[in-house]
Image (cartoon, rainbow, N blue to C red):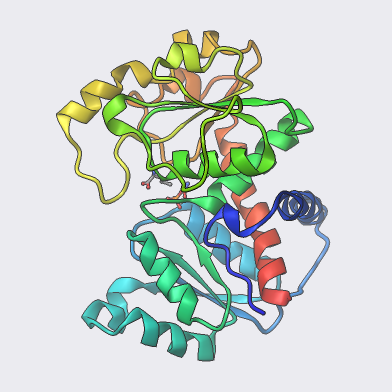
Length: 299
Ligand code: CP
Ligand code: NVA
């Protein structure tokens, strides 16, 4: 049976840990120049309905590294743009491809595509969820800290698709997560996940980052959202700057999925500072996604 990757909730803790373990092996193999072509003869179609640097390039290079091929499918150039249904598109694409990656707006569209595709579908970001990013970020944290146990992650900023994915990750892996967002800009809450001692919503960011091992932020205006002065004003005190970083643990990692708006959600001083791991984070997208591609497309 085909397996999709639409949300981290598609996997249990053991499966997530096995992606992380495999990522470590694949990263090592790439650094050592060890060839590994399990996806020879396989093709991934990549539908993009929004811009991308990291997701597109890391999936494309990932397929190449694994001996496979990828097709960039800009949604503007597909008949989807002219009204062909997702259902028909899924059925047709499944006749050519071994897997489909999709980045789009409405999460329901990804679910619809997956329902009708007979090949695995991977979510490359929706307005709701960005699971491949957070899987990769978990790898980065584990790589830097050696484990994920008893860690506190503080998410600070706009409540968005990344926040949503972090809440899911914390509920599966049982680490502590504090989310600090302004009251009017809270994320949608994943169904069935309640506040516990491990998941807290703390409006004051200085309070939220207290004792944190990781400070995580993202842009204040996500793709497809309207920029509003009111939103930017409400988020001012959620900027990751020296004062906020000093309120966390002394050696806290600073993370951002990128792209960053320097001077807005994070200062350049912090983004380029010694605690920032943002470029390792970006690199690890490649290694992590190779573990996903290998698992989903070769099974
Ligand atoms: N972090 C991330 O998904 O980056 P892109 O939008 O460049 O793919
Ligand atoms: N929240 C951001 C993430 C970009 C990778 C967005 O959806 O635009």
